Image 1 (tube, rainbow, N blue to C red):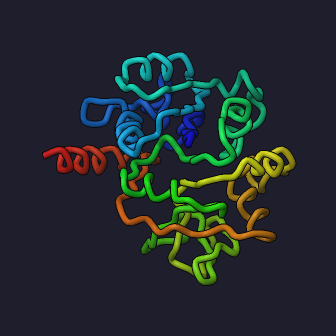
Image 2 (image 1 turned 60 degrees about the vertical axis):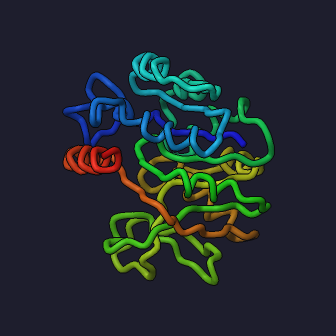
Length: 238
């Protein structure tokens, strides 16, 4: 099964670190951050990895060239594929559409840390669309997932009064039909093409199943995340 990793964003909340490089290769504990995700992806037996870059693309490519693995890594320039006027979490799928093999694939964000166990579980044998979730004490900061018997009803971005503590972590197992949905997406209120809108569309007519994470999920989104990630990685390696 292929995995697509989105790594095109500018990381505006990390601007002092990302003016000259993509946030995905900020050094954390002496390695580009995305290397830790790649370690887990390779250990979960993905042999074909598609990374979709954009912001400072050449620097991302050079960093990935230094990552040693027997898996095939393909780095795609989102801006070359679909232009720079389209932005959002659904756009990397459009950039990778003609490269993905098979009728199902994983999709995740390149600014997360995920466990090998959870990446393996997302490859389970089922025809359902899968979306990883986690219980969070502050769901209002994230996309809140409303569920019924582990079936996703809808995702609501940063609601003021969340009806659930389950949040979307940005890890999906998607069928090839997702491309038809993404091609017909309208922009969200913030002017972006959102993968969550595509998931909501699928959830109206078919089963989208929540898969609660059993391992860890850490995010590189804010400057204060850097010290937390260094602490986690150093403790994990010790």
